[in-house]
Image (cartoon, rainbow, N blue to C red):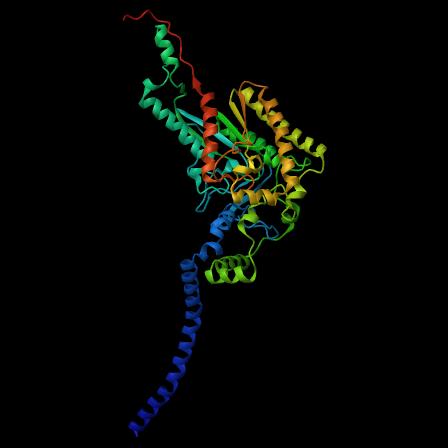
Length: 465
């Protein structure tokens, strides 16, 4: 009887075993199928080189990394705002908006003060430090650059400190502090490269994408002056040409609608993260590429990135002025803002360097790469004409400001890359890494001239030969 029951139990267990294994097999298939499909898609795209086409040679990824995303004081994005990039911007009553502190990705680092820098900038200036602040918009910030180290601020700082190191290591190769007594030796001394002011140079990148001259003026007066800068560099002009004259500075687009909207809940945030992960899968990207026809990166770059002064749904053509009177008002606003900066520089005996930022229409068409030519075609003839006329008037206004004080100098960099052989622009105002280094060299030469030390005259007794 016991033997019969034991056999009966084993029979029941054995009859259920295939059913359990069947569900396990189905579960494994459900898990393994998408994983296998993803691995196969990655293998095929990498092997055929199509991966570069699917990811559009990482241009869109870089654009997304630099695209603004406006968030509230809690760091949560505004639900109705179209901008969904990685560079977080928070509303500021004084500045319009500013970078959210302490954020980082593979392309940039923003420190705890909201400056594009790896380290914090102390309020108290260390002894021997010569402090330079860089103000401006996207070009000054280093939009679409590979990393912090390739930006204008970093390169300028490196060049200045390199010059100081050379002077210290080889003093005989630079002009002396005091000229020699003998006339023939004086000429030899003056033929040497001049020295610049000795010290530890620190260039702080306080630029914010989308800023116009009104934002930069507020940034200078409300924040930068607290850090006691020796020199302030302003690289701007472009945003003022596209910002309506009714606005003093760039602000969060559609702010009124955003403020009355609700912030997304935790479920919405998790959903967005899952959706972002899902669209990064190679299999999904291949499917979308063939079924939806994603917009080429080059066509996307034809629209200025982070033009925060324009509503998200507005086209670039709508941001151009309707007539010459509107352009005149925009130039007047720019001149007035720069004049206030000049008055600060004169009253504090600080140095102010005004730079008109480069722009793609300043390029010679014969020297453009095919990618740059596509961008210009996408911008249209009206845009090109507006920029050429606008930059002429900006240059006249900036020159007028520079002539008002000996503490101010001006660089017109609109056509800096006119004959540049190579790829200079990634968008209308975003520079390649190589072009950023050219820009840094221009500012280095200008600032080094400002910092040149003249040798003193020999006043002692006649030395013995």
